Image 1: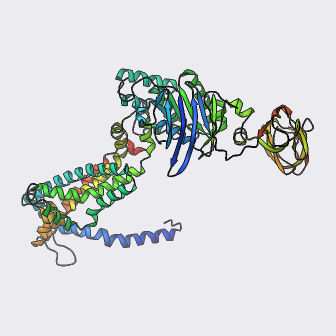
Image 2 (image 1 turned 90 degrees about the vertical axis):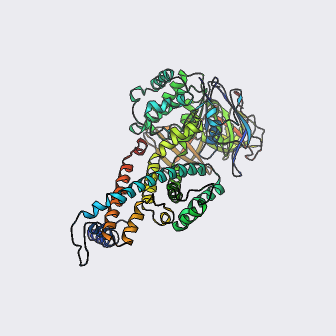
Image 3 (image 1 turned 135 degrees about the horizontal axis):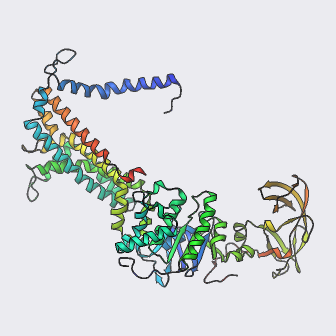
Length: 370
Length: 265
């Protein structure tokens, strides 16, 4: 390969205290994050949280106000986008409308002055990889959303980048196509084990399905980082607990071996907090059962939602709204009815009540968690 | 305006015709009628004759048609190149710079074209830039006058162009020049041809600045029309006008046929 983006494509991304500000407004605050070579890292957060800004800082479309961005061992902070050797797929695909599929995929290779014969082979390979070989001579406007998505991925992969940036790649697709493409992306990653993938999404299912690790971002800050299992089973912050898996967050007071909630003592497995302190109890709605059992809580049903395979109950317990996802009920309780809910001690996680304004940002390098 | 009732629709059509016919259609039809006549003293012209067209398509008039076509072609291509360049440059500037460029390119539109003609005449009448008496001064003045329109329509098209194409191309490793030639300009092509057509039509009809500048061997068609009517040959002037109108429309039609793949978006 010759041309501007010469050299072996570096794999792995490192953010070193990267801050980005737009006109005095900090949209990314001192992000420290490392994506290992071959790792899929999801940047998960609500819209406006700064996750897309982080991706654009890697691509070179925004300039950090401070901090450095590394691809592999190379500091790329001051490099223009075309010299970074990355692949990128955006939500709207951005296929060039005046070029056929084949020429779209060949674009990056021609820009890098790859030999014609090699370009042809690599274009064919990339289209084969995403199953779009039959559409090589079509124009983008003649393709469906899902097909355009595949071509966009082929175009990004044809240049053999060490790093693939995916910015909400599935959000323009309908639900059914989305789950298909999710499986497809997982397959692609298995076939290209050396490529680091940074996957920006607001959808926790996409992040949980695809990512090796998830970085949760909210209000310009990294809130939490860990494997999907870690984040789901033992979240460290209230934000993670509610954003990933929509957990029940109940304010409790720590006692000796138990915690007090709404005038009841609940048994937990993890009570390393000091007695007398306030904390937040995190219980997943699908781990809450109906009827008597350990840690039983009685309250009034305020809302019942039928979701096909499950029923979602909202139960008012001592002024707190508790969500319970139950396997479809034959006879769901009526509104206003008294019901008893329970959960197993091992299914609850105790979160220390964190001061949200704490200046120390979460640092996540390597596999560090908790 | 949405009109739903049947009576309302007919009313709107009637109003449209009442305004359109006398304001736009009748004057043009009168010119066409006059171009076929020998005398017009009553309500209708007398004739018909094709004699005026013999004069309008030979000799000096034919020469003037060629002059106009060459001038308009040169001026519109130069204006397109300059206007596009400036619009691309303006797009990469910050707000104050962009405002300054916008204002600069508005000048030739805001200043009366007679003044532009005089200014060009004064500026290029002395060495080292002695263009007075050559065809180049006419082409130069036309370029100055129409570049503003090229700049404005291309700048508007650039504002509408989604930056994601440019960014996708850059992320694939394309240098800025490569992005410009392979992505931006092809995507802007429909707007570029439209801008070129507009410049061409404006240049074909330009009279006031041309009057100040044209050398004897480079008389564009509007000057010819003015001269003909001035010396009383109204019907020859009408025929030359119809030729000018027809030629301009033909060229515009041809330009609008340049469809690009990008315009199918």
